[in-house]
Image 1 (cartoon, rainbow, N blue to C red):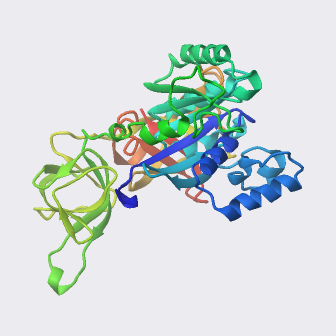
Image 2: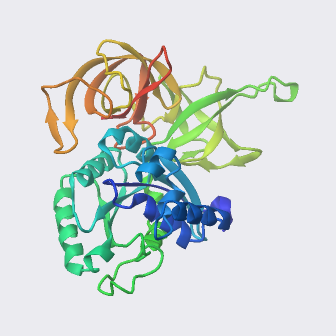
Length: 418
């Protein structure tokens, strides 16, 4: 299998401050031989300068000066590595409540979330908060890493107690696939190699789980969705009548001769060609970027969506969303914002705030409806032009939106369509 053909697993880390997220990623990179000798020498020297008695693997991901000084993660750090079986993109996200928006950013495209729990502390408020956000963002797989087992003498009773406590809490979440692994990120127990200290644990190591967990079923292969990103008109004599629609398949499988409808216009045609570079393909599926050509000349532009005629999404101007507010300026109802959904951009207004979610208790607050930075709230939006949407729980690509300040172009919020 070539490097280009390998599966790509995107995963995010979450957990309370000092649970060892950055150290775990450093350990994964080091033990899987994914860092260069000069990187190792640099963090070895940095650890000595700081007076630490060990090589601080967290320095591999904590790149900001403030992060290294405080020993915490502030911004999302992305790291890329590969093993012979799979490619990986890691989003190392912060643990503090004031960086909830950063966690939402890092987790929004993840297939899997690693949630770290300190074996000495068990399930804490941040564990519940991050698990709720992972569930809200539709991450299909959770791996609960019970870390610092070396500090509780690798006791099976501690692992089982935390596992039972988390399982009881997770019953309220919308997550189907949960795995538990006892680890020591600092010493490498059960990270890449099996631990000699925990013979009672019969499950797989973290790396083996990351390499083998089934992610092909995470994509929606039922609802065919293709957002037009660019209309290709070469305007050359040899391609006089060429009209192609470039974009990414966001769901389902599109095949040559499929009957399709272009939304929001509603005109129908059949797929004449599916092209990738200079090849003709019989079909396309997520996350392929291809060019579609239709049998009929239809007025199609950027932001339109091509779908299978027998399976259409909703075309709406009123949408309910769960959103995480990113900006220090509070949200203003009845103020115009720019909304971006797939490749379409239009204006919208917040018509109603239903409630805010207390992400510590998961209770709905209907009294205080002021939405500020890092708040998660349910809103009703009214858009100027219709959007072609699915529920986020059905398709994470066609069910996601962002709100933008039209005067400053700042991203204000990310939202999941309900």
